[in-house]
Image (cartoon, rainbow, N blue to C red; front, side, top):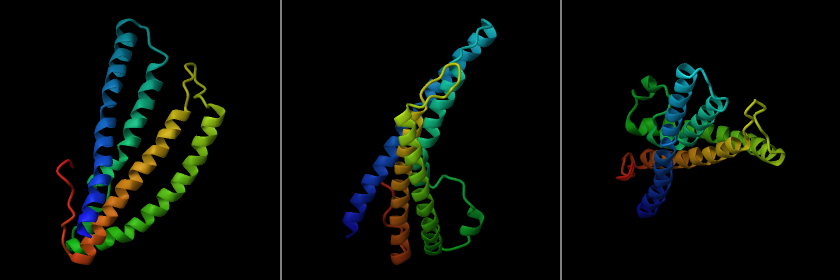
Length: 177
């Protein structure tokens, strides 16, 4: 059973780790766009109509699609001051309880986002600004982000259940973590 759990976790971890690393590279075009905009605006007095929106959209991809990686690392915002007072098993039990709320939230967020994304794609929604880029890719990316976050949540729940039952942290993240 442990071998199966380790294989499942290795697969889930790989999805979160590699997607997080890949989408982190989208920060580079954001930096380039900001530099181009600053140079155009302040050196040549010629701002670009597409720059701000492009930077915002690409940053949204980074933030959303990196969410699974952040959750897997448990680097998201939490109230650690309370949970750190418990044993490792106690922390796992608290995390399991919190996971119930997490999965309920992900379910409703996913349902609403699916509706927004399909509507946006159906009408080929655009931003409505002078540049007017399509918005539906961002809404589709949000659906992908929810799936990535869900998978990282499943991996964390498996680890917490294992700790709660065995009292051991023997399903640690793989070497690629």
